[in-house]
Structures are given as C-alpha cells and as structure tokens.
Length: 293
Image (tube, rainbow, N blue to C red; front, side):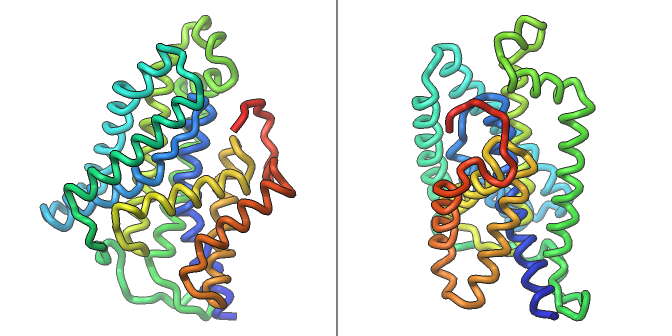
C-alpha cells in the first residue's frame, strides 16, 4: 500500500512538471495558432535563471522566484516582438513559424551552454528534505509542494481565461483572429501576452522541477518531447487534457521505472505517443478545433 501511495504521488508530481509546459503549449497554440518547439528550452532557461539569482547571487528564495518568472515573461514578450510578430506580419506559413521555433530552441541551448556550461547543476534546498508520513508512505515535501502550487496555478489560469478581459480576448482570437480584430480586440497584443503567460507557466514548472531534476542545457529536449506527448494523450488543444495527459505520462513512467532501467523513460514516452497517434489520435479529451497539427 505504501509503495502504491509513493508511486502515485511521485508520478502525479512528475506528470505535472510535464503537464504545465504542455498547458503553456496549448494556450499558445489555441491563441496564436502555432506550436512552440522551444517550450522545453524555456523551462531549462528558467531553472538556470533561478540558479543564477538564488544560488550564485544569494537572493532570497521568494524574490528569486518572482525574478525568475518576471524574466521569463519579459523573454516571452521580447521573443514575440522580434521573431513571431514580424513572421505574422509577413503572413508566414505555419511551417515556417515551426521552423523558427526549432531555430530558437537551438539558439537557446547554445546560449545556456555559453553562460552556464554543460556541467549538471541542481538546487536541492528549495523545499525541505525530510520525508513526511502520508497514508503510511514516506512522501517528500517537494512532491506536495509541486501538487499544491500546480493546483493553485491551474485555478488562477481558469479565472484568468474565464473571468477577465484578457481571457475573453484570448478565446476570441482562438476562434477567429480576423473577426476578433474587427470587434476591437488587439490580436497581436493578446498573442504577445499569451506567449508571456505561456512562459510564466513554464517558468513555474521549471522552478518546481529543480527539486527533482538536474539542470543541463539539453534537458529541454526531453521536456519538450514529454510536453508534446502530454498534449497528444490528453487531446491537442484541450487545456484540461494537457494536464491529464502529463499526469498519465508521469504515473506510467514512474511505474515503469520500478521495473525497467531509467534510460527507458524516453522510450516509454514514444511508445505512448505512437499508441495514441495510431489508436486514439483525438486524445482522451477530444477538442473541437479544426486546426491541423
């Protein structure tokens, strides 16, 4: 029983680290209409920013977290302004925008190597290290923090999307950009803010991941793959599906890691991804979107 509890809590917490970037991907895709293949690199960058301000500059943790999220929001606004806005103005095809995100991913990996080198780094002092007894099992406090913060973030995003003018603009832009523009909605501004919010979500996931993952410039590749798999499993374009897909992936990975070597994690992700693409391409939560992925 205690092993089951540990596996479930551990799997769900890892799954949320996959699900939050997937949620950011879905948010941006629904609003802007393109898939950001550099989402994992932005998560990796957020971990390095936190390491820089918290470990190296010794700024208090809470302020370091605020700075990290702020830097990622600023990065989202900047990248949208200098890269994606010009592409939209030239009516670039979706394929070209996708290629631009690949180029951005490569640039970011090399930028992180240049600044922080390739040596694995970690931050293990964010959460307490003493296990807690829960339902007869030893559960690390970091797991509970990941669960709690993720749930709060998801609730805040729901409020933002359903109860604010920005959320209304985002939903309108996702339905029909031209019609939204004719109704007085600043579509380019909404897309820019959506990109910033997407990276803020990813930054939170990055901050939470520092308690369970080592930091290397290439960590974004794995995160991007698993975030994409989570969106496919849950139903591409469905925000709830992104979170559920991440959790399913995390739990299956955790169970499999008890049987197979850790090096098989990526193989499990690809097997799940292929299985859903072949037998359930609409995912668990079918979306009504007509966009092609």
